[in-house]
Amino acid sequence: MWRCSARCLRMSPDEQAAGDSTSSFVATTRDAFSKAIRAHRGRSTSTPRRSCDSVRPESGRFQLILRPVTVRPIITLGDPRLRLKGEPVDSFGKYLHELLDDLTHTMREAPGVGLAAPQVGIALQACVIEVESQLHELVNPRIVKASGDDNDLEGCLSIPGYVAYVTRREQVWVVAQNRHGRKIKLNGSGLLSRAVQHELDHLDGKLYIDYLESMDDLIPVARLSDEVGAEEEELAPLA
Image (cartoon, rainbow, N blue to C red):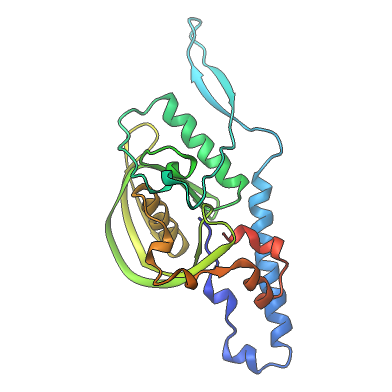
C-alpha cells in the first residue's frame, strides 16, 4: 500500500493568491515525491539481502546462519488469491520468519509502505508495514478500537497505476502477535492508521476499490502527474 496525501495536491488560499504559487507548489510537491522515493530506494539493494537466524552449537557459542531474502512476485487485481481470507497463524517458526522477511524485502523493493501475505499468494494472517522508518510485523492482527474519519488518496501495489479517495478511520488500536507469537499492541493515526486498515483488509480478502461507488472513481497516476507537474515515473510508486 502507498498513500498520496490529498493535502499535497491542494493549494491553500494564500498560495493561490501569490503570483508564484503554482511554480512553488509544483516544486514543493516534486521535491516531496522525490525524497520519499529516494528514501525507499535507499533501503533497497540490487542483490538479495540476507536474514539471519542464530543457533547455539555444542561449543556453546552462537552462530549466525544467513539465507537470501527473496523478492516475491506481487499478485495483481484479477488473481482470485487476492480475495482469499488469510488463515490464522498457529506456528511461529522458520516458515513464518522467512515469510515476514520476504514480505519486508518485497515491500521495500516495490516500493510501498505495506504488504500482506495474500498479496504474494499466501493466505495467512500476516503483514508488514513501514512508516517513518519504523517496521511493524503483524501476525493475526485485529482492530479493537477506532476513532475519527479521514478521506484521502490511497493506492495499492496489487492495483498498480491507480489511486482513489478512500475514507478510513483516523486512528486505530490494534492487537496482534509478533513473529515469535508474543502479544503486541499498536496505536496509529494518519498514514500508519490508513496502512494498517489497508493491510488488514487484504487479510480479509478485501481491496480498497470495494469502498468506491464506481470504478470510475479510480484516478490514473498519469493524471496526477499532469496535475502536479511531476514525471509519471516519479509518481508510479504512489500505487
